[in-house]
Length: 175
Image (tube, rainbow, N blue to C red; front, side):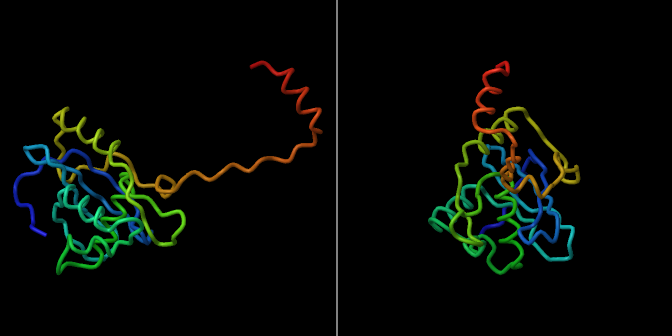
């Protein structure tokens, strides 16, 4: 992977838990002057090594498309040749946080590529608004484990009413 050395305008600073949930990552989303979107992991609360290099979203999408259906962080290795093994899992956590990938429902430890439309729309709006953040700014939204997980279904409370009681109370209640 060719390292980007040109100026990148930081549009968004976010945070998320690592895939292992042992640390919190801070990441940046930025763009080149031509609007090309890039991502990078910027900080890690644990001691693990990682690369802060910017990765073009187009390269990430190519790798994910090539991976096909279900994939693990191993699919991202070509983006980080000769770098720390943490990079792929850290990038995967960022992609999940941004809604670009999601956990596979039917295969443990695997992910699926999701529709990038909402993410692209958000970033294009930031590009159009001339947002420009400093690398050391704080993330716009703190990481919470619940943000990365789908909501849990609510448990229904047992009711002492009989089915006919429920129907009559539903008819009596205002809509």
